[in-house]
Structure formats: C-alpha cells, structure tokens
Length: 187
Length: 122
Image 1 (cartoon, rainbow over the protein chains, first blue to last red):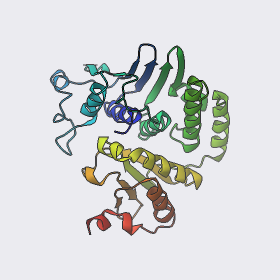
Image 2: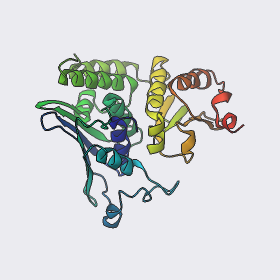
Image 3: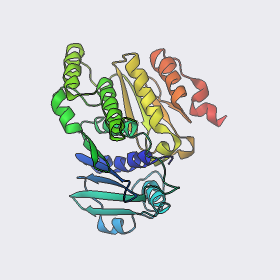
Image 4: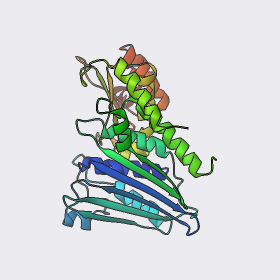
C-alpha cells in the first residue's frame, strides 16, 4: 500500500463486509507527542475468539478465493516499521475496533494519502446494496478537529436520495478536502 | 466554503430530475476492491469511472464494487455487464483506460479489446 488512506480503505471494507451499520474512522495526529493514531470502529458482527487470536497471521483469512489475507498483516507491518503497532479488539455481535499507531515523524511512515477518495469509495460501497452503511470520519490535528458524519448528510438529503449519487459524492469530496485544508491552516 | 445547506439544493435539483429507474436494469460496471485491487490502484480507477458516468449523465449505469475476483496479479480489474450481453473483464486498468472503457464500451457498445483479459493472455 502506497499510503495510509489505502490501508484505511482496505480495512474499513472489512467492517462493511461484517454487516456494520456505522463505521467510525478516527485519525489523530499529535505533533507534540509525535504520534499518529488511526482507529476504525464498527458495530458489525465481530470476530470469533479463536479467529481473533490468529488474525494477524497472513495465512488466516475468511475469504474463499484463496488462502492468504493480507489486509491486516500489511497494516501491522506498516505500523511496526514506524515504532508503532496494530491492535484489534472485538466482541461477537457487538463490533470490532482496530487501532493503528505510528511515530508521526518516523522516516518510514507512509503519507496520509487522499482521505477524500477513501471516504468516497467507502460511501459508494456502503450505499451500493439495499442496506446502507453510515460513516463518521474524524480527523484531529493537535487540538483542531474536522468531522464528517454521513448521518447528517442523509438527514439533510432526505430518504429519497441515495448518498452514492455522483453529485452528492462530489459535494462530500469538496467538503472533506476543504475541511482537511482548514485543519492544516489553509495550506 | 461547503455547507450542509448546499445539500438542500442538491436535494431539490435531484428530486426534480429524478427518473424512475430500477438498479440492475442497465449497465453495471464493477471494480474489484479487495486488498489486491486497492494495492494495485483500484481506487482511482473506481473514481474515474464514477466521474465519467457523472460527466455524461449516464442515468442507467450503476457503478459497484466487489471483493477479490481471484486474479490478483491482473488487478485493477473492471467488469462490465450489459443487459443481454456476455460479461467483459478488463485487466490492469488505470484511470485513463477506465475513461476509454466508459466512453467506448459503455456508451457506444464497442468493447475495448486490447484491455480485455483475452488480450492479456495472448
């Protein structure tokens, strides 16, 4: 994976597959403490206890098309390269929380990447089928915060309009890019 | 500055122009979005497909995502399902190839042979 937003996209897809109704993605950049923390929390079906024990193993997967599952191990490797780690907590029928930590200024830390594209892709995936998945994307930089909550957008649009409509997605893209730009002092 | 109020405008405009359509009646464009696809660059492919569909106002086209198709080395993979026609699988797609696929195959019905899995195997 070239950047962190791709890891976030990949692992959040797991939440959608787990039947989540709400996926909370939080990125917390603390420059003073030199930490970068990414958490993905869902209310999906959770991971069975014996699977959870081996979840970091690349040869453990639930997919049927082949015997390797690289999403989680790749993220773990990315964290460990940067003096961080990946932790997964899960309870069956309650949900799963994944927390990835990095040293913010580590030379090997991949760039954040395009979070607007990641959120657009997720929202599109979450509005694809009959069920709809909501997302809360919170990005904290030191004490400043940007938040996107698709539940608010859904309320504003009304029930007739699907979030996956291109004009809605374009609005969301602009909203995220602007919000993140403001977070970084308009840079 | 983007505001939630702008969504109200989108809502009004959409409700005025909304045409009764049922998904799956038209063309489906499916992009593989598992770990393998994402790592190979499927995200910009998906978004350029979506952007092209929006630009040309293709109301009967559905853009969807799927998991691993099982041919990771050929990702990003795009499948086009047209009603009454055989599925066409495009491999090693990038953003510009995706635009050509929408323009030529989805809009004009002409399969872009050189990007298909058949051409790859030759």
